[in-house]
Image 1 (spheres, rainbow, N blue to C red):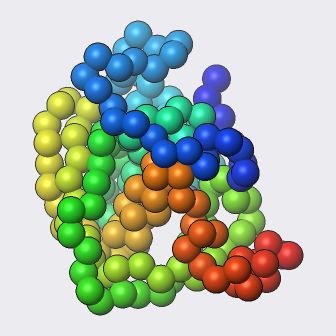
Image 2: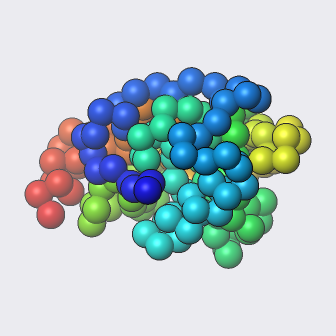
Length: 164
Ligand SMILES: [Zn+2]
């Protein structure tokens, strides 16, 4: 059974390693079955993104998807995702995280990003993301580097939010 770990679970603080062609997921023979279970877990938790290390797997992939998105309107796992270009323009908006129940933080991030990733079918894709979709992609990439969103705000703002 996969489950979402809460901060400060140790894998949330670790930098994940590249997903390689011959890698597999413990307990799954079939990556598409894993993808379905993984996306279901994200949706059950009302998330729009879920990084592998949030479920204890320190490999570079995450699920992303929301009806309001353009590129990721359909939920999918993407593999070895990376941001290849950030806009200079930044925006501040509220973010939540499935590993921080009931905590909402205003995080400043580049407004648009150019990204690259691999699909479950093995294709390499590029996209330009904006709005919540851009934020979500950046938030999940941060996870893969062991950076949780509380590290992106001032200590004071984090302490205020953490008090509830
Ligand atoms: Zn998160």
